Length: 276
Image (cartoon, rainbow, N blue to C red; front, side, top):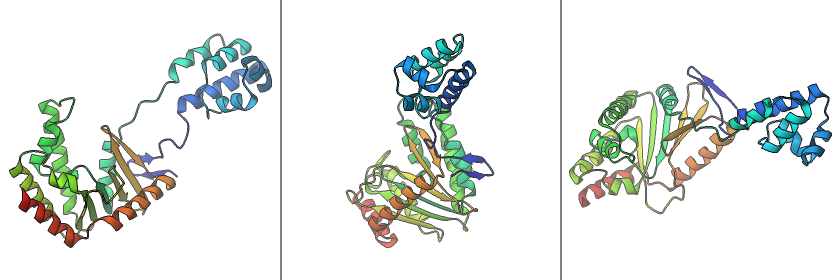
């Protein structure tokens, strides 16, 4: 499934083989066909079975150096196919974080699970600076200021009373300060304050209760399509495929079953504040 919105298309990364595999395989097939060489002949010469050659020509399998060499020699490609070997390495990861911000701005509902950090939309400036300041490799001051400004700006989304926000926060980031204790107490007070808004629900996931260890966000768009977002090692990934959205919906349901209800969560945060 492809979800197309105002800001372009979001597809399931991994739903198709890399474009370079498909392009290279297609070129090999074109050269073979032009030379009048059958797939069986090529497979025999390269010492591959028929299905392996077919998979490489269709881009479902990474074309090997031997496949390209034999195809180039048999079909008179004059080195063109061999030269494509340099472009068949892993494709670089694409960070879709900025695209996420655009979808986030248009969403009619926002739900997230964050077991390790206070969610960005709920962070105080002090928490932001502590987190960005502890990043490794270190960030320079200009980058930190830029990221703080962007994150603070995103928090205006919470003022959109027609948008429903649901946050589930793990126990660990509530108990363990990102900065000093007083700054963390202000952070927890801010979480409680934001939780009083009628369009915001904040729940706590007690430690050890949920086995889902990675964070995720699910957005519902005005078209009723749902988009998921995950971030790992600084690289964000958007997905709107039926399979991935369904998988995250199941995880979301599990998180909902296991987390404390809003009233219990408020008491939990108040208790943690009292223990600081």
